[in-house]
Amino acid sequence: MKNIAFIGIGVMGKSMAGHLLNAGYGLHVYTRTKQKAQQLLDMGAVWHDSIQSCVEAADAVCTMVGFVPDVEQVYFEKNAILDSARAGAVLIDFTTTSPALSKRIYKAAKGRGLFALDAPVSGGDVGAKNATLSIMVGGDRDVFELALPLFDCLGTAHYTGNAGSGQHTKMANQIAICGAISGVCEAIAYAKAQGLDVSNMLSCIEGGAAGSWQLKNMAPRMLRGDFAPGFFVKHQLKDLKIAIEEAENRGLSLPVLNEAARRYSELVDNGEGDNGTQALIHTYCKEEL
Image (cartoon, rainbow, N blue to C red; front, side, top):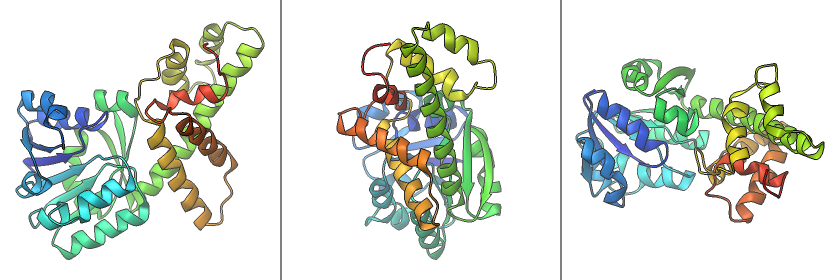
């Protein structure tokens, strides 16, 4: 692989695309607004004003967009990825989306002489910037091996099984995260109600059994009142809704997942969809910490 097309230059995608460019890949990007890609263009990326022109000569096409309808649009619309990618290209969707949609993309790609991998990531903006993402990949094993040098530029890739397996693994990841960050919020709410120095409390517990990525990275942001998105509330809610649907399809009752989704839905209803996931603290503590 030499030439990479990248669609979705957002909080995560911009850093990921930048790592590929720095690794020596020829980078082609598509954005509706050219200005959003300017930093990458200054580094040597080539901007395109259509998906078709962006992907038609690429060895690999990477997507990192927001919601399920966005994924459907960039893959299935006329003159979009499936219509325009050259035979033999590898399509890599880093978006967290429906496992069923990932299977549809895989099947449609195969019918066109293309190869598709679902490869959702975990690690947030910090992982994207530092190239330490955990990448959960579903699809054919030989295609995963072919794309491994590309994944290595972004973090650590894990092969999870057939098409859709990457998305199911990411659902498990999101379920674990929602429990962890809810626990952080409840610990802070408890400490505040008891009159403790919240910052001192966190310092006391982060090195012990309560320590977690969420505690280390999100709790300090909560205390600073920093709710800039490393991962949007609205995207977290989207993921949790997918997880709930998939769990219900298997007859699973997951109360922690459902409660977290309810609280994130409350944030969206209150206009906080564009905040980072650490804004969950607002459903526990209304005043400043």
